[in-house]
Amino acid sequence: MMTEAIGWFAAIALLITVGRQVYTQWRDKTCAGVSSWLFVGQITASVGFVVYSWLLGNWVFVVTNGAMLVVAVLGQVIYLNNKGPDDASSHAIAGPVTRQN
Image (cartoon, rainbow, N blue to C red; front, side, top):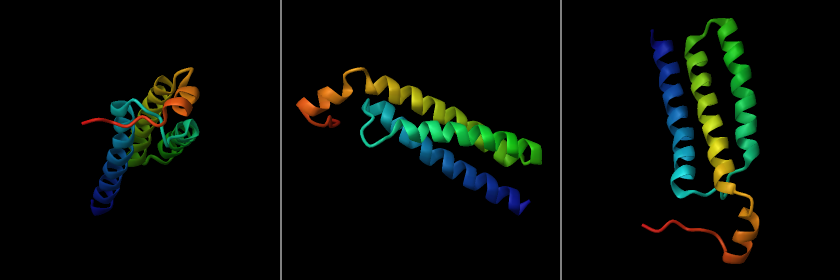
């Protein structure tokens, strides 16, 4: 029972951390400091880990990696939406975009 609790705690911590990054990226409408390859790699790894975990019957990791796959897809969609076709040229002229409170 304690082993499962540790696994679920770690899963929640990971999802909150990555979810927060994706939320910040969405909220600030920027992709500064984030690479599209982060999400491509995360999607690839998550698909592999979901299959692997399912084959092992490890439900902590099936659920965690399934949720990470959803977060990675959302992150990639937000990244591509924020980047836009003229992202590089607009930052080169106007400088970095900062969030105003």
